[in-house]
Image (cartoon, rainbow, N blue to C red; front, side, top):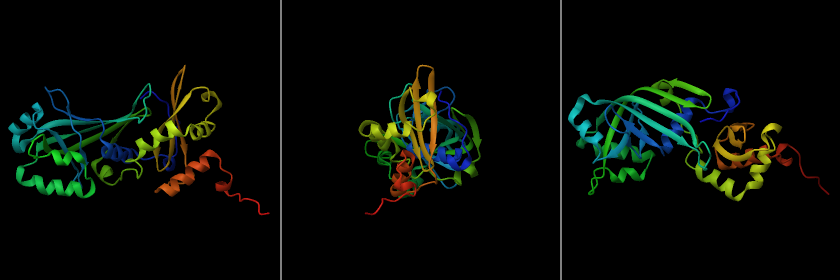
Length: 264
């Protein structure tokens, strides 16, 4: 998280709560920790409307055994989410999220209904491992008490109400595949976007870093360090048609900037 992102106006960048929701939706680097134990990986993190988070952990983990002994009282835990860049960069971590609260095992009688509730909006493969014949994973609930997010610009605390009031970015599920495809197959597009960078940064190695409804982020890896730069869209976009148009405008396509082909 050593990149340097220029200050943007609120309309040009996701709110911290939106970024956290997107990170939760991806949950590619999530672990849950309690005192005295090594962090335990959790493949699923799902924010519930009551302000708690459902997560799965291996049935064989020491964490599961400790949580079982605490029963209804629960145990204090910290859920850490690491948002990794989709591409292999020198500094791959884009942001970190820490969610602190009380962790409890979901009672067996409540598991089927909660699994159905989660699957209705997030049919994650990890749900199939809960209470399966192989008994690999256990469903737990974290009663959230505090949320903190940190990136290259600093750290910020978010209220549970603020988190519940935000939505994941509409492109968060396809961001990784889209950026990987852009980097591997469309370097001409990356080069056109890089032409928008300040002159001092154009000599570095430019890679796609992020995508959201407000714009594209580029990482410049150079001899003097790493630099992150956001290229904001003219307006927020919500679908692939709007995204394609916004990218073409950033690339400098004249016809999408209001000009029309001359009739002959």
